[in-house]
Length: 184
Image 1 (cartoon, rainbow, N blue to C red):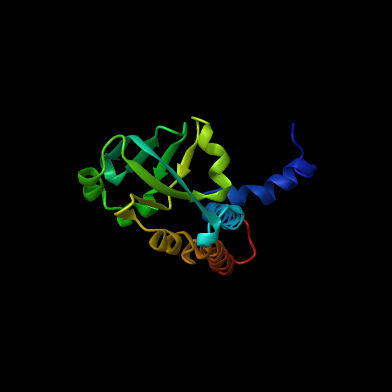
Image 2 (image 1 turned 60 degrees about the horizontal axis):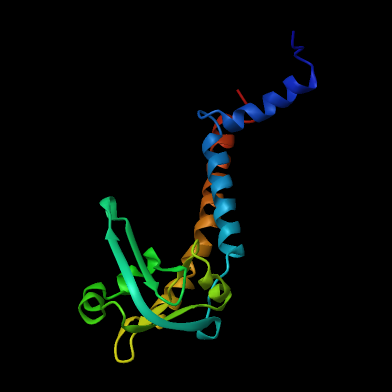
């Protein structure tokens, strides 16, 4: 038998409205998601300039450009000298000239890929996917680092988390004013 004056029961009365979808579940969800987005955008490693990049060269082993259902795209490149796969991130695909690459580059041809300096040690391991920031041959460029670095350092990614948090707090204030100081 649970006593109505017991500590667990009293605590549940304060916690329950925050997970009840009719009351504050939206607030809880938006603040948690916003906090996670803000944390991940601040703590993730970012390449901010050309000084953060290094170039690897090798012969093209193969490539895979998959345009999946519902807009998913996975573009990978493998070089014979490295075990890791090199990935063109989805954010950069709009800057990549896929058709021109398919026409101009074939297996065995030497290509240069710019990657983060932090990823250079991962190139020898087959279980890593390394982000590509630029892709070129001696005479042609297919992905330019000037565009990818601009996209990588876009300020919007830092604004999404706080917007979720502010929306949650705004909804809380609206509900709190509408309902008064009553939980139920």
